[in-house]
Image 1: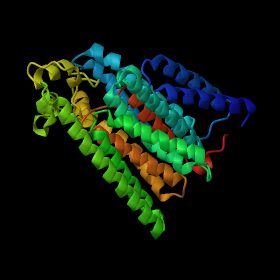
Image 2: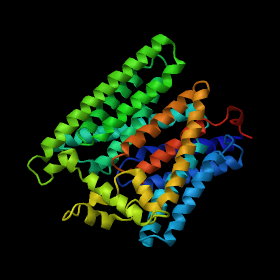
Image 3: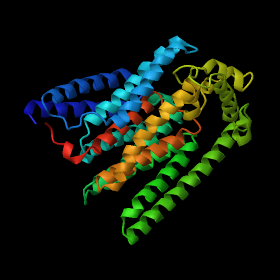
Image 4: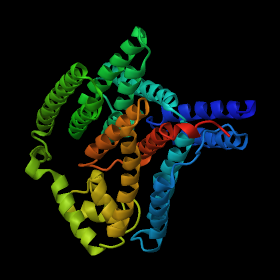
Length: 409
């Protein structure tokens, strides 16, 4: 690697780290995009000078469905119910996430590079948690919109970032007591703030991730270690289950005596009406959908699900799969499923390899499962959460690229 190529690669890593740190904070879009543009310029120069690991792009098994899904979304402008809205969503919901995927893939040649992103994500989590605690101490309440998008975005961010904290903890050098203590404190603060968040599905996602991580790690461990991992996973699942029960009770108390009291009961949850209404809208355009954009039928859903209630939170189907079907019909859903399956297939292939590549595969599959569980009752494959999800997918696949191909040309 030439000196110039190495310098450009280090500069790209710095700019991507800066983008990753500011990503979860409100009003940081321009700053994030600026850092990503600078990183892209540095990576292009590093590639020109022969300073990037090969292959520089993900395999065609992933690129082909990504390009197909992207082309379909762009083409949907032609038949969209709201062409102007679809055009406005292409840049934040398609271009930026896919750019993040490619940039982080190029800048993550191995598991050590993944360590860097994990620690940066942990730093962002710590800053968010400290800001929340300080706001609650000074003002008596936490407003997630002050520093973060909203309660749903915060919960989704923690589902994606906490596994990286676990990765950093397990990868920390032996004897590094202070860094590990900091990681434990960050995890505790993050879970505390999440408990203020009134977001029940996050606890189910955490429990599912803990069980899956144990199930994927256990086969490669000796029996005593396997028993310890299983016990830890069961303990974590029980804790998350208790927090889920507490969140249900808290929500019931919070809504009691208000006009939304009925929502505390499952049978009156507005999502049931939203899903029924959305299924009917999918049937109206079953093959190619209504056009790209999570809120493509936002006005119809608000007006048609709960009569007399124009809640802005009801602007989409509250389920990623249903939203994709609304936007793209059977064709769009098939392309999206192809893309997700391609990423999962690449990750699953790593389970047959030796550490640390096997560990990268476990982390990736746990993140996919957690994100899927989180989006069963909502859809946060949008804005900063989508950028983070695709950036991590790119980094994970980059860290798993063939060993023989890592040496720069």
